[in-house]
Amino acid sequence: MAPLPASSIRLRVFSKEEDVPEAKRALKYLLPDAEIQTETLSAEEDGGVFLTELTVLIAKTTRQRDVKKFITLLTENLDRKERKHLREDAENRLDEEGNFFLRLNVKEASEGRLVLSETGLHVKIKVRAFPKSKAPQMVTEWLQTEVACQR
Image (cartoon, rainbow, N blue to C red):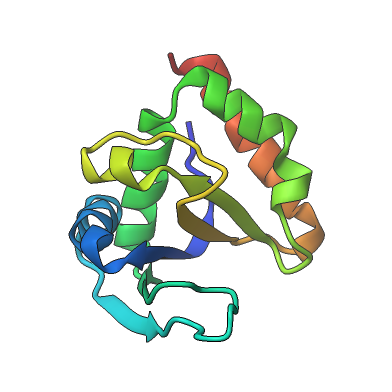
């Protein structure tokens, strides 16, 4: 069972100040060896997008050992229903550059569990495909194989 061929992983979380420790735990669970970068987005005083200050936390890697560990973690810890959902929605989660996107629940990830979410921890997986047009097929096959072989 071959893992999804990927060249990089980028994780990003937007967090209120009081939730930063939980977000850092989630990122360290997913990419334990990656450095976490932080950036502060100030609150908009004129009723803009952010009413409170937010911290953006980013962890990324191109090290193949870490990329493979992440793909394995994702494969082994998403349940069958969630992998099926990803497979059915794979084309909508891929861009023209071969990036595969999903989101995970921050609280669950900080506790060592992976649960898909509509908000939360943003995951970008750069699928290694040549030509790039093969990325959707590769993702679908990977998810299909995993769904058939896992829980």
